[in-house]
Image (cartoon, rainbow, N blue to C red; front, side, top):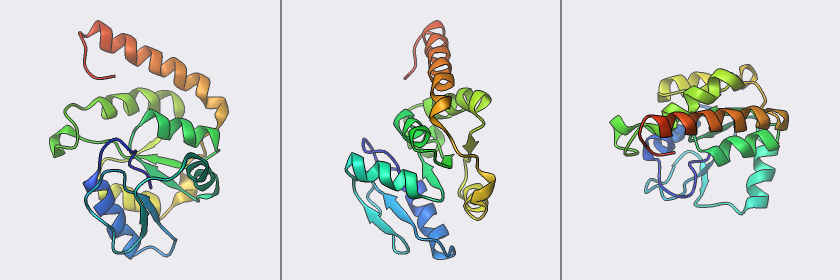
Length: 160
């Protein structure tokens, strides 16, 4: 599981730790700036890029915040990815740009997106239902990102 490196994501890390307690698979959580340290899963603050890519390639399933880098890394490594966007109502981010982005991307890319720990747990227990993302999808993602940027500009701003 990865939360990115620029800020923590306590709700996701705590939730993944709870899921790891009841799940037979190995869990590795990249914490970034998160101030919670899991009790039921291995964790690292940040992984070097080569190791990060190798783990994406080898993982049965990757759970990640809804960052563009996470999505592109999953595509480059033919990874099953579940996106869990930060939510402004939970004080995880100042606006819902991640939710807006995954809504735009999922329409075109058949992404698996969850917004609650309960939903995430059911997906983790059935990873075979999550489609692999592939590098061939990156053109579609680029097109989708371009459309989202146009909408942001036309609507007067917001975080891209």
